[in-house]
Length: 631
Image (cartoon, rainbow, N blue to C red; front, top):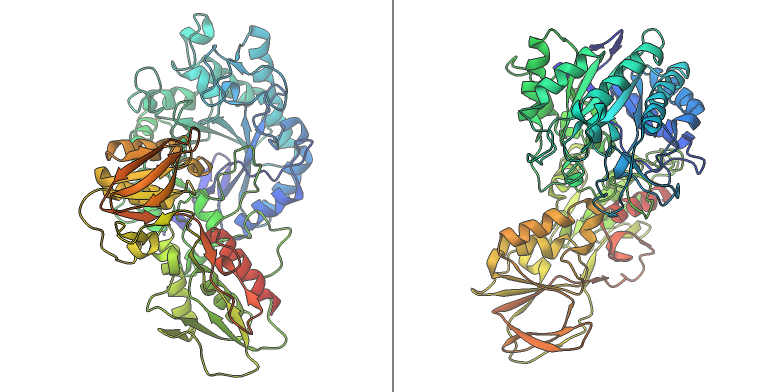
């Protein structure tokens, strides 16, 4: 496979063409330094076969403090040194990402004005940044040079400049954010060139490589960088002294498009990457070009490298989320075990952590990601094998059975329905993960009994309840002659909906009701207690895109509303602010609200997942691991 072949990068050589790219982790310390959690996190990806590991972006100047645990280059020397040693022990290249978020930052932590090329308000906070003066510009350029020198002195193999999302460098390059009429505005690449040339002249020790993460499509053609402009920009900046280039997209107005969730297809930067690489080659720049853009499946990655038809559009592939989901992705490919690679479902539910809650980066399917210094060896062999009967084959049951079996227990999996996966198999984006579990249990030879609820078995067996949830309490009345009322999971399991308008009750503000509304289109009436549909989707970056899709599909949204009754006419709603009631005529109502745990099974002490408290797939899998490890 081309993906597994070495890749020369400047004076260095990466052992594979897979990059683990820079992203917010929230693993940092209060003093903005890198920590041993960072070291363990990056070491794990290098051990799993990543060719290049790019560390979380570090601010090059104190004026930039974009999120609470954002690293500061001046505090990163020791952390970079530890990461370099850990990553290089496996042959991978360790690269420091250098950054300044400019007008896309935050003043909440620094209590100082944001710096930017022009006075363009930050989209979310609406804060107007300070127009950078000559001394400010010189200080930031000097910060990039000093940060590079510090990283190389710490033993890193190179540095990567961020000119992609959340980047002052990109803001200087773009007509969206650079309205200046001085030398920094009339030549919009001047700042980026100065940074590259400054690092090349005074920031790199011998052999260290210099990369650039470049937004090649700001998705704002009225003033931003467009795919037509990108090849010429890449050629000009490469000439300033680059050793590699990563093709990305996104701008101040399209943050969610840089790393979108599963609603957007994979490989979305393919069409812009191809001409950028071709232009660089035509200009004589033989530097590696990395494709980024939801590349989570190794077959697509291999195709992009020309592994199937020799028509390469990239030289390396950034597969960041894929390696959060499975740190051993490359190692498994080297052992011809591609079918064992745990898939990334692109849910963004736990790996997108740039928000005020400060969650630690992790993965729905691999909860030890980000917790490498805390979690035990889940697969530590047991010293006393037991018979373990797991009731319920949803995500929790599938994981509990898998871990218990790998530890050496005798495991049986019991499922009352005829299918595996529970709610996750029919609702939400995790069907691919459920299919992976099916393959894994088939490979491991797990005895699975479907269509049953219990077994006559060893009385000394350990029983684990993973039976999921059940419909929650309904805080509304239902008339005897009311229109049909269905549970959303019944609909997902095939219950037919009548013709006509369908009211969807969404107290959660999550993806389940929104997804069904999209499918029903103009038949759907989505009822939410919030001011905006799918309020909780802000955590995954899908809030604005989801509302755009709902509008495009003609979905009616009843905001600030609570259902009080289901009658023969339809759903009676109450405005939660003024108490006014109105009736929404419909053919049926689908309850997409909160759920409750299934009832405890007598004599079963161990439970995991929604059988404890209905939450997400992440909690179900994590608790299942803990239960299996405790046996």
